[in-house]
Image 1 (cartoon, rainbow, N blue to C red):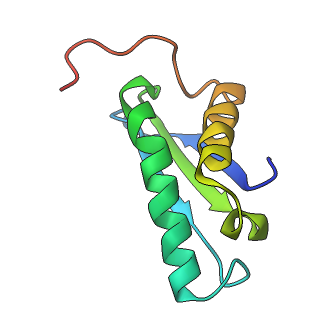
Image 2 (image 1 turned 135 degrees about the horizontal axis):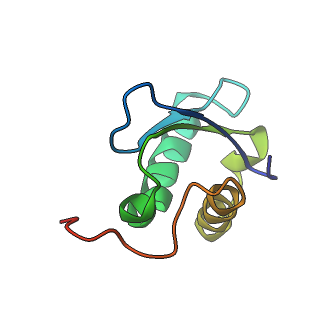
Length: 97
Protein backbone atom coordinates (compact mmCIF):
# COMPACT_ATOMS: atom_id res chain seq x y z
CA UNK A 1 0.00 0.00 0.00
CA UNK A 2 1.29 3.38 -0.94
CA UNK A 3 0.19 6.98 -0.54
CA UNK A 4 -1.80 7.03 -3.79
CA UNK A 5 -2.30 3.36 -4.71
CA UNK A 6 -2.63 -0.18 -3.47
CA UNK A 7 -1.72 -3.23 -5.51
CA UNK A 8 -3.35 -6.66 -5.26
CA UNK A 9 -2.13 -9.63 -7.24
CA UNK A 10 -2.73 -13.33 -7.69
CA UNK A 11 -1.34 -16.14 -9.81
CA UNK A 12 -3.26 -17.00 -12.97
CA UNK A 13 -4.71 -20.51 -13.19
CA UNK A 14 -3.27 -20.97 -16.66
CA UNK A 15 -0.08 -18.87 -16.87
CA UNK A 16 -0.03 -16.34 -19.64
CA UNK A 17 0.94 -12.72 -20.08
CA UNK A 18 0.44 -10.46 -17.08
CA UNK A 19 -2.97 -8.78 -16.87
CA UNK A 20 -3.58 -5.43 -15.22
CA UNK A 21 -6.82 -3.90 -13.97
CA UNK A 22 -7.58 -0.51 -12.46
CA UNK A 23 -10.12 0.37 -9.81
CA UNK A 24 -11.04 3.96 -9.02
CA UNK A 25 -13.99 4.41 -6.67
CA UNK A 26 -16.35 7.35 -6.33
CA UNK A 27 -14.44 8.40 -3.22
CA UNK A 28 -11.66 9.61 -5.53
CA UNK A 29 -13.98 12.09 -7.24
CA UNK A 30 -16.57 12.55 -9.94
CA UNK A 31 -16.53 10.77 -13.30
CA UNK A 32 -14.13 13.25 -14.89
CA UNK A 33 -11.62 12.92 -12.05
CA UNK A 34 -11.90 9.12 -11.94
CA UNK A 35 -11.34 8.84 -15.69
CA UNK A 36 -8.34 11.17 -15.50
CA UNK A 37 -6.81 9.03 -12.75
CA UNK A 38 -7.38 5.87 -14.81
CA UNK A 39 -5.77 7.45 -17.90
CA UNK A 40 -2.77 8.53 -15.85
CA UNK A 41 -2.39 5.06 -14.32
CA UNK A 42 -2.56 3.41 -17.75
CA UNK A 43 0.13 5.76 -19.00
CA UNK A 44 2.26 5.21 -15.88
CA UNK A 45 2.26 1.44 -16.36
CA UNK A 46 2.63 1.40 -20.16
CA UNK A 47 6.48 1.53 -20.22
CA UNK A 48 6.65 -1.21 -17.56
CA UNK A 49 4.47 -3.76 -19.41
CA UNK A 50 7.38 -5.49 -21.20
CA UNK A 51 9.08 -6.06 -17.83
CA UNK A 52 6.03 -7.46 -15.99
CA UNK A 53 6.39 -10.99 -14.71
CA UNK A 54 4.15 -13.35 -16.72
CA UNK A 55 1.49 -15.43 -15.01
CA UNK A 56 0.09 -12.75 -12.70
CA UNK A 57 -3.17 -10.82 -12.48
CA UNK A 58 -2.74 -7.38 -10.90
CA UNK A 59 -5.20 -4.80 -9.66
CA UNK A 60 -4.13 -1.21 -9.01
CA UNK A 61 -6.61 0.54 -6.74
CA UNK A 62 -6.47 4.33 -6.51
CA UNK A 63 -6.78 5.95 -3.11
CA UNK A 64 -8.48 9.33 -2.72
CA UNK A 65 -5.13 11.19 -2.71
CA UNK A 66 -4.47 9.99 -6.29
CA UNK A 67 -6.79 12.67 -7.67
CA UNK A 68 -4.37 15.45 -6.68
CA UNK A 69 -1.14 13.53 -7.21
CA UNK A 70 1.30 14.70 -9.87
CA UNK A 71 1.87 12.21 -12.69
CA UNK A 72 5.52 11.67 -11.71
CA UNK A 73 4.49 10.67 -8.18
CA UNK A 74 1.93 8.18 -9.53
CA UNK A 75 4.48 6.68 -11.94
CA UNK A 76 7.09 6.38 -9.18
CA UNK A 77 4.61 4.72 -6.85
CA UNK A 78 3.51 2.23 -9.53
CA UNK A 79 7.15 1.27 -10.05
CA UNK A 80 7.82 0.99 -6.32
CA UNK A 81 4.73 -1.11 -5.58
CA UNK A 82 5.40 -3.50 -8.47
CA UNK A 83 9.05 -3.85 -7.44
CA UNK A 84 8.13 -4.44 -3.79
CA UNK A 85 5.74 -7.21 -4.89
CA UNK A 86 8.43 -8.66 -7.23
CA UNK A 87 6.09 -8.30 -10.22
CA UNK A 88 8.51 -6.41 -12.44
CA UNK A 89 11.88 -7.67 -13.63
CA UNK A 90 14.94 -5.56 -14.26
CA UNK A 91 15.43 -6.95 -17.76
CA UNK A 92 13.13 -6.52 -20.74
CA UNK A 93 11.85 -9.84 -22.08
CA UNK A 94 13.18 -10.82 -25.47
CA UNK A 95 10.77 -11.05 -28.38
CA UNK A 96 8.45 -8.33 -27.10
CA UNK A 97 7.41 -5.91 -29.84
